[in-house]
Length: 114
Length: 116
Image (cartoon, rainbow over the protein chains, first blue to last red):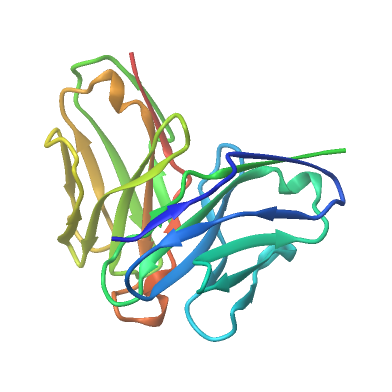
């Protein structure tokens, strides 16, 4: 089975500062990796995904993530955050060979302040 | 047009009652899911249906019974509600397993259930 660890439950950051949200996974098989964002009182929205190919993946809203197989990580980054980026961010993993459901990490709450 | 719609958005009820949450998707997807998000925001898969057939049934009390009348609908019925059932329930859908879009889930806005 695959599992995901998000090392930081909360990340406070000032507006226009860079941010990195950490995600590590464990799996004995090839995986697909995802980042979803949940704005207050809303559903989850896909930010970006890694299925294959280039290990640097660009998503919406200026976010990007890098798949590092040797470190089993998929950290999310943004060079300059906005107030509107305040939300809950979820890393998720899915087996590339089988299985239907995503397994989510516990989420990281990003709080951007002026 | 809402891609994945859930009703009701909010549901407040007493312990012991039976309630249902409905989900519909207009994306033409073949696979639908129910996830539960607890008070600490942890998301856990409950069920998944592919073309009306149950394919994932995690360790969920049998008081929870999903029903899929067709591949565009996946409803969740809960019997004898307990305090611990209070959570936000998310419906999601994706394309058929094996297709390129199978790995991307589209989520509904969630249904917040409060059991008193």
